[in-house]
Length: 224
Ligand code: DX5
Ligand code: ZN
Image (cartoon, rainbow, N blue to C red):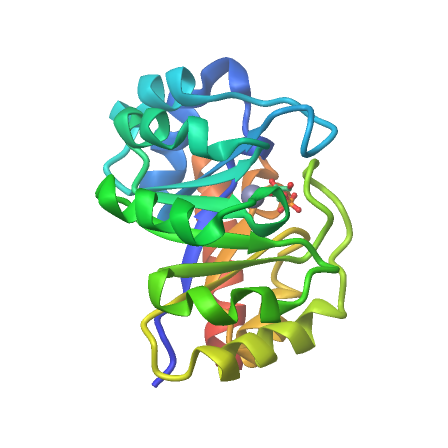
């Protein structure tokens, strides 16, 4: 049976001047998870925020805090993210030297463990860590910025990952350019956790967020 669709608004597209209020608004508007994009200006050409900000906004929602680490040397900071209130910690395969160890550490910290793959990275890099994983994030844009165009070649990769994980309880997440037009393509291929920044936060009000989340969810559910 297909897993339930999870909508994870990326706060990268929110108004940072009122970040706590924005998180509370998407929570009330139907978000399942809150997706937090951490960028270091090194692994990706952009800088966002780190554990102190996550800790500060943790009180704004009880939903799953899904932390997408686009950083080098993530091992040095895993405990800080766990202490800040992360529920899911997702590291990039391309930024990891000892991925197996990093995933063990994340679970030992009491968090769910995810690995993100850039559009060009083969899913085969994860074959030997599948039993340490709670989520595989397939980037549908090159990481670093919101508002980029969806890369269609990742649709086949979603289907290959779906086959690779078999009956393991692993979420398949997609991130980048997800909207009511692209959500059905990835949901039909097997993705169940959909990150969306621009497509959720457009309109700038809680009512708009509710309509945007509903539109993405319904489009994905119909395609499952
Ligand atoms: C990109 C980030 C995404 C981004 C998605 O590096 O990982 O989470 O916020 O933004 P949209 O949905 O606007 O493509
Ligand atoms: Zn992300």
